[in-house]
Image (cartoon, rainbow, N blue to C red; front, side, top):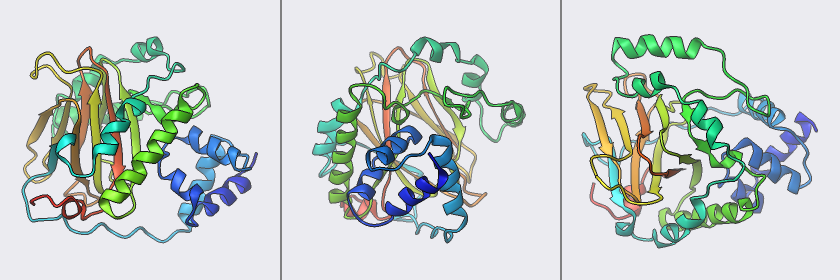
Length: 300
């Protein structure tokens, strides 16, 4: 195994072809390692991180995303998946995407739950109490996972793409590839997965900005069953960067949400996700073209 082998693999994915197309559906280190192995490249997750950093150092700065589709005060857009033209193939794949890998230790995940972390999602990122908690939390040394890589405390959930050693992974990956193909047909441009996340009961993603990955995001959200009380559901919460108003969006199954990630310090899109229920929640994220609204022929 070597960084050189990984670098050669990553460079090969820059050429149009099947390998590059498959990579659009992948976000986890372990599944990219597996893809490399299946194509004759041998490297570890740590070597993948090193090779990626090396190539990034020599790459040109990414182009800044274009303007929003309209001058609007809205910072998010939500739709029912059944109402979006061309999304029928995406909806059809959801049962194959919403997996619960047997390699996940739910008892271990539950043991990592921190009440103070959940509490932090009730605060505004502009609140001095949050800032004090955030400084303390980020100063703590990270716990290492089984591969020796640091575990991000902000993720109390399951990254499905980090679980490749189970019998259902092949079918799951094939479904992801079909979804990318379907969405590229809808949007007429490149679409990439940005995350495939399972939120078991009491799962959460703490406040964050994703400022290092600017542009429009689309998330397809579903649950294992409807919420009995709409007031008791999972939710998406964000802070309006202009007004510092905190907006909380209760969720329902089969929702598609769009929002924009900014790098400008004055426009950072702080957001968090919490599932305080006994339901299981899945969200599948995608980087989509800036003109997604025009492509869907939706009113601005």
